[in-house]
Length: 217
Image (cartoon, rainbow, N blue to C red; front, side, top):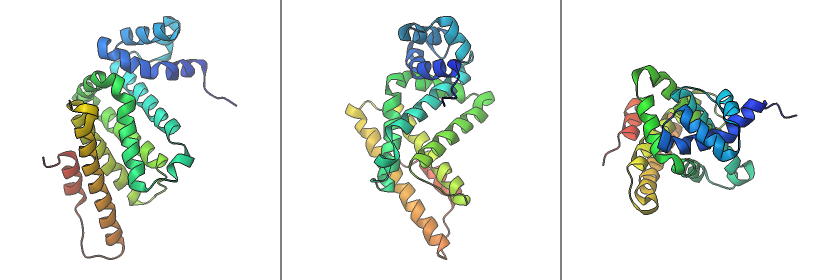
């Protein structure tokens, strides 16, 4: 039985379009109205279904992008891929889904960087990392659950910033950047495996995450 309410259905219908219209109108009710008109939805209903504030609209948009990932990567597609390919393709696909709203994403990051919005920014980032790992088949419940999401948040954040400033054809520079970051994550997973096996080598999580977020050029 479909438990989605009519307003939630409208919210989901318009969420991605709101981001695309935010390129021109910002994360404002004007973007909501434009998305509603293009979709044939009554503006009054759209205003009831969607948040009034910028952070709320950014949140709804981000959830829609995550849902698009879940739809694009059903279990039968994921299971035939190696773990590195799963994470790489999920991150790359997320950028592709957001491409029509690229300039709005830049505005969104500026809004989320405001001191009063930092907690929301951290929550959104963690949620996306959690969605990606769950789609990838991760079932960890110990400390690995947290370290995987922490490192992936850093990888995605740095890659997103690179993508926003990438003018290369087909975002080739971002693709190469992402591949390097994924390689580092895979090395880190190997280090953790060695650690659990009793290796004397103890990697520093804080230094590693800092390197992912601010990688050497």
